[in-house]
Image (cartoon, rainbow, N blue to C red; front, top):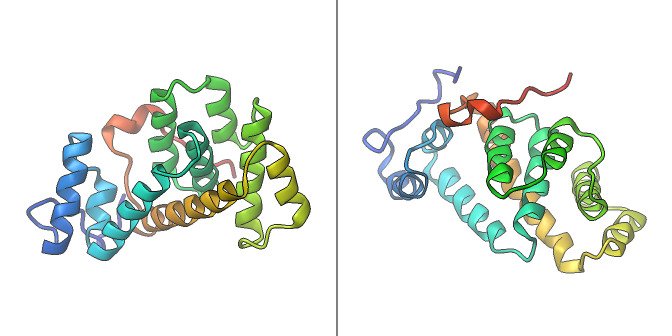
Length: 186
C-alpha cells in the first residue's frame, strides 16, 4: 500500500545516517516496522521524530495521558498506523476497553480528567496553539498544570510528524498490529 516513490528501507538499504536509529528501534521492538523503514529515506526526519518521541515520553504526563494525546492527534490526522500502534500501547498499559474505544471512536471519554486532556489537545490542534482562555482554564481546573499544557504541545508536534509521514508514504500496518486495525469514520 505504500507509494513506490518511498522505499521501505531495511538496515542494509537505508542511508548510512539512518542506520543507527533504525538499529535502535529494531533492538527495542525486536523488529523493524515498515513505517520506520519508510521514514529512513530522510534520516533527519527519522532521527527527529525518534528524539521528539523520547522527549515526549519523559514529560510529566502519565503514560496513559500521553497516549490520550497521541490517539487524539492520530485520529484527528486519520493515521491508521498510529491509531493501531497506540491502541496496542494502551492495551499493554492495561487501559480500560471503554477508554480505548472512546478514543478510537471520538466519543466522550469515561474519565473526566482524561476527557479534559483530550478536549485541550483538540483545542491546541483547532486553534494552532492559540487556545482560548476558557479552554485553558478548563484544562487547568481538571487538575493539570501549565507545564502539562506545554507537554501537550510537544505531543501534538511529535505525533504530527509521524502521522503526516505515515500518511504521505502510505505506511502499511505491520502484522503484529492487525488486531488493532482502525478505519476513520467518514
